[in-house]
Image (cartoon, rainbow, N blue to C red; front, side, top):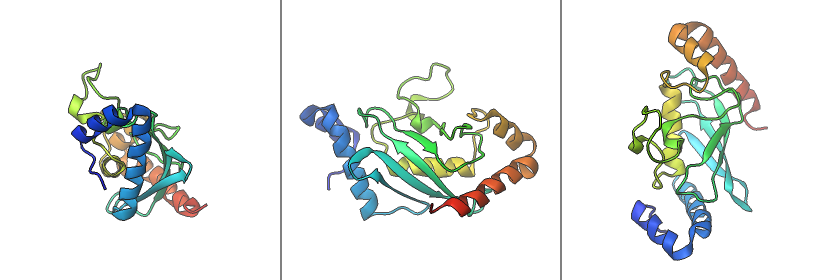
Length: 186
């Protein structure tokens, strides 16, 4: 199986064209995850005929408020992947500073490549074509363990996390964990 690195991606782009490259890369990612599963999540195609839409199950990381949760999310890859990042949306309700109330995940690794017009993120913290489903999921699991309250997508959750982490915030997360367990395999 071909390794995915930045040089290889650029060579493939020239060789096969961007439209075919994104399909090729998505299929390689699926094969790699099936061959070498990673602890903490599982991922696969929602529909075998659509390489651009994936379903992910994330296990709440140990020793965090999310421990024991089974959170379902969708990854949607753009047609010009891997040059642009996928979008990630939690389908399972989750209360977190870096997940907006609609479930959209807001972390640097999923932001468009290049300079941040607000100057908050360095270009190397943003999307790079070498990222895989595995690196995205490791970042999301890390986000669950250590929220970034300075750049929230959900201002209310960030405020509670900063001001009442062991009270209201913890109660809301515990409710989401319970609900995720009840609906995990529906």
